[in-house]
Length: 176
Image (tube, rainbow, N blue to C red; front, side, top):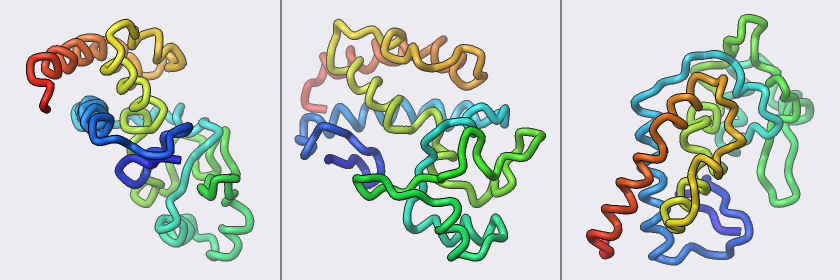
């Protein structure tokens, strides 16, 4: 399994070629442009995702923020996948989502929560496909994104133009 930038899992790949890495960098830049310009509106919808990943280095911090002893947190809130990743086991909604749709551990939340939905593997992989396959329609690739979410409305309204610009830049200078 290939991992881009140490955290983005690219299933089905064993390695990332230098050419692929350049295209992934372009996809990453597009994704991050959303994260920087459109911060979370705290609607709480992303907190209902079934697979909330936790990095090993985040476990102690999240446990402390939640006020749960580390051993109890690992035993009761963490699941290990067959490929070794860690997921929160109490999701849909996340165990740390309050009734007012606010996160109880906001400043110590997992990195995937900070990045969602802009810089997560699923979205970035679809941006990558759209960049590298001129027949791919990004709006069809991201049909899974619910239009009622504030953040995905922003994405759906502008992503096609961003893909077009990135394809043009790549065609103009294939060395980049």
